[in-house]
Length: 69
Image (cartoon, rainbow, N blue to C red; front, side, top):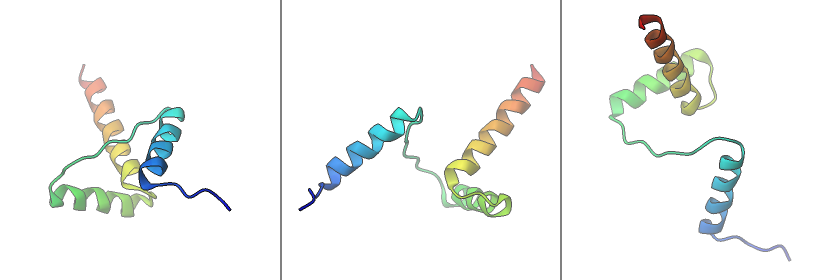
Protein backbone atom coordinates (compact mmCIF):
# COMPACT_ATOMS: atom_id res chain seq x y z
CA UNK A 1 0.00 0.00 0.00
CA UNK A 2 1.50 3.40 -0.96
CA UNK A 3 2.39 5.77 1.84
CA UNK A 4 0.07 8.76 2.21
CA UNK A 5 1.74 12.08 2.90
CA UNK A 6 0.40 14.68 5.28
CA UNK A 7 -0.21 18.15 3.88
CA UNK A 8 2.84 19.42 5.78
CA UNK A 9 5.09 16.72 4.29
CA UNK A 10 3.78 17.33 0.79
CA UNK A 11 4.32 21.09 1.16
CA UNK A 12 7.84 20.62 2.53
CA UNK A 13 8.77 18.32 -0.35
CA UNK A 14 7.26 20.70 -2.90
CA UNK A 15 9.26 23.63 -1.49
CA UNK A 16 12.44 21.55 -1.53
CA UNK A 17 11.87 20.77 -5.23
CA UNK A 18 11.23 24.44 -5.98
CA UNK A 19 14.45 25.49 -4.19
CA UNK A 20 16.42 22.73 -5.91
CA UNK A 21 15.32 24.17 -9.26
CA UNK A 22 16.81 27.54 -8.28
CA UNK A 23 13.51 29.24 -7.53
CA UNK A 24 11.74 30.39 -4.38
CA UNK A 25 8.09 30.64 -3.48
CA UNK A 26 6.71 33.77 -1.80
CA UNK A 27 3.32 34.90 -0.60
CA UNK A 28 2.18 38.40 -1.57
CA UNK A 29 -0.64 40.46 -0.17
CA UNK A 30 -1.85 42.79 -2.92
CA UNK A 31 -4.90 44.97 -3.55
CA UNK A 32 -7.58 43.40 -5.75
CA UNK A 33 -7.00 46.07 -8.41
CA UNK A 34 -3.35 45.02 -8.69
CA UNK A 35 -4.30 41.36 -8.95
CA UNK A 36 -6.81 42.26 -11.67
CA UNK A 37 -4.01 44.06 -13.56
CA UNK A 38 -1.75 41.01 -13.24
CA UNK A 39 -4.55 38.70 -14.39
CA UNK A 40 -5.29 40.96 -17.36
CA UNK A 41 -1.63 40.93 -18.39
CA UNK A 42 -1.55 37.15 -17.99
CA UNK A 43 -4.58 36.76 -20.23
CA UNK A 44 -3.42 39.24 -22.90
CA UNK A 45 0.06 37.70 -23.09
CA UNK A 46 -1.26 34.13 -23.03
CA UNK A 47 0.80 33.29 -19.96
CA UNK A 48 0.04 30.23 -17.83
CA UNK A 49 0.50 31.82 -14.40
CA UNK A 50 0.50 35.05 -12.43
CA UNK A 51 4.14 34.35 -11.61
CA UNK A 52 5.08 34.66 -15.26
CA UNK A 53 3.12 37.89 -15.56
CA UNK A 54 4.89 39.34 -12.52
CA UNK A 55 8.26 38.20 -13.84
CA UNK A 56 7.51 39.96 -17.13
CA UNK A 57 6.62 43.18 -15.29
CA UNK A 58 9.78 42.98 -13.19
CA UNK A 59 11.93 42.47 -16.28
CA UNK A 60 10.32 45.50 -17.95
CA UNK A 61 11.04 47.56 -14.84
CA UNK A 62 14.64 46.33 -14.75
CA UNK A 63 15.12 47.27 -18.41
CA UNK A 64 13.67 50.73 -17.82
CA UNK A 65 15.91 51.26 -14.81
CA UNK A 66 19.01 50.21 -16.74
CA UNK A 67 18.17 52.63 -19.56
CA UNK A 68 17.97 55.54 -17.13
CA UNK A 69 21.35 54.90 -15.50
